[in-house]
Length: 204
Image 1 (tube, rainbow, N blue to C red):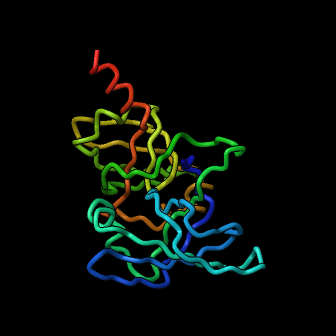
Image 2: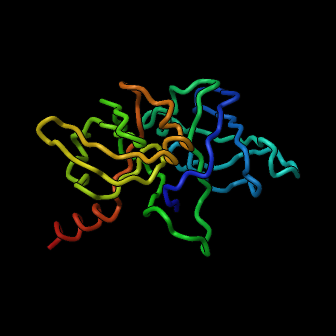
């Protein structure tokens, strides 16, 4: 499980593709306890560390490798990223860790696009297309995970088919949102609690 609090950003430094899927090698600073088989969120997609560089210097830019199965390539935009692209990184939450975001599984529901970006004072307002198959789970002031980032829905315009989030300077500076442009893809994971509520109410 993840919280949507991004630890660092990483750079894709190598890609290996074959008939079974796609393997990414990602260089990222500050990841001091990588190990084989651990779960890691790459721009909101829960993946498994296959290999990693073991070095003693905590400041070193370590790399790790993850494999994208065919389904992951199909349902996310990680099948389209290239060498030099940056991704958001979060390791799985420790059992004794502080819960700062919201419950994030790393199971991407869909991909949407950036419709508008507006600088508002020191903050930013990002507007996205409302995913038609998941719009019922997106509510005003509700939690949403975008590219692995735990965010709060600031507003929804269902007639226009859009929703917006407010981005503070820290989030903008420390995630890949600073590199997003209008038309770029974004991973969406809706609040899993809303899904459970829908299922329980529907079973009554």
